[in-house]
Amino acid sequence: MADWFSSWFNTHYYHILYKNRDEKEAEFFMENLLSYLSLAEGSLLVDMACGKGRHAHFLHNQGYKVIGMDLSSESIAFANKDVSEGLSFKVHDMRDSLDWTFSVDAVLNLFTSFGYFDSITEHEKVIENFSSKIKPGGYFVFDFMNAHRVVKELVAEEVKTVDSIEFHIRRFVENRIIYKQIQFDDNGEKYQFQESVMGILLTDFKQMLEKHSMEIIDTFGNFSLEAFDPETSDRLILVAKKK
Ligand SMILES: C[S@@+](CC[C@H](N)C(=O)[O-])C[C@H]1O[C@@H](n2cnc3c(N)ncnc32)[C@H](O)[C@@H]1O
Image (tube, helix red, strand yellow):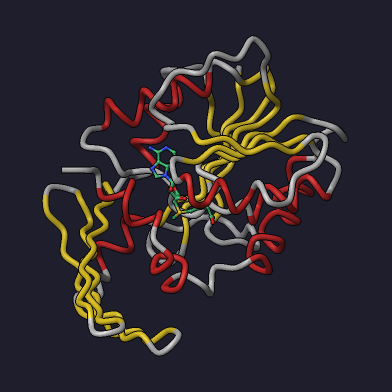
């Protein structure tokens, strides 16, 4: 059976359900992150799991060189409709090794685009692949869910209506994996998808990153970059620096 993340993210229903996570939200977050990071103009950034490129396009407009990578060919085809010098998009599975002969100033992984694989070892492999291409003093930024709070305050059942589609959502946790089952009807057809994301915690990120010469220098709890608090924060946004 195909991995859930190679099919669900490639459907237009994923983009309907999450349509509120839009360009405006991406721009607000990136503006705050850029002023925090103070990267030199022309720095080379990677958006690992860039989706349709909402962050990557904005970063490029701010004067950075950007490479966006994603497993979804549909999303990359969309992102590629608007490219110019210094901005490129490519289909790439983040678990595959990189054949780059150059290194980069920062790698960003945004909006919970991690935690999809079966084991911590597989996640660590991704961190190893990308960390090895970050320049000394460069950054790895993860914007992940605050798994501690998601599990503690799990919303077991929810119905969301978007674009006249009623999405019936059921959540549960098993062996550290947070499952989200999504059912809906559209044009007389029944659909069912399931997301499963490992509840990776700050301590897990710390261990994985430290093994690959990355030190966490800051943690934030939302897109305004307020301090992270596991009990109350919406997000776990962490900034790691390459030694
Ligand atoms: C929650 S979406 C976020 C997309 C984008 N970062 C955003 O904020 O709009 C997660 C993305 O991860 C991508 N993805 C899932 N598994 C992947 C993998 N193994 N390698 C690369 N990208 C992957 C999906 O195709 C999807 O675009």
